[in-house]
Length: 123
Image (tube, rainbow, N blue to C red; front, side, top):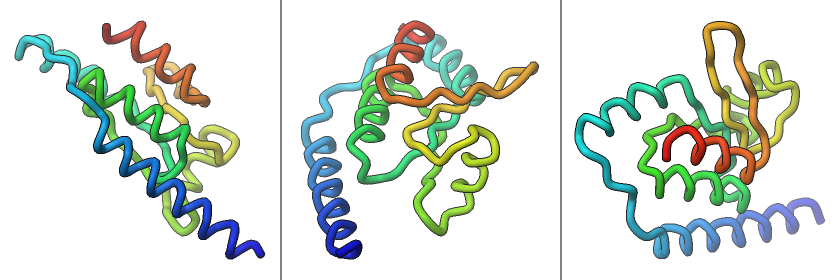
């Protein structure tokens, strides 16, 4: 039964991911100098995600539309970043945006919160 549920979840997630790719729209355009500043600023950001998770797709879609080249890390079973997320963030829940600051790392969960943070910071 567990295998059946996993297969259905992955199949539906794959369909949602495909639909996302087809319907994404356009990236935000910036002047080259502004884009360089954004690219430097996002070096402190990392998105921990599952490929087929609808909430992760929502976060990736926001990142794409804002033209933010944020590093993405897969936290599915068997991937090394899963332990990194569990140790740093305290739980394995995706999406999670890791914000590295000189003082400490901030682990921001929930796709609406991630989108809100990115919009406030980069638009």
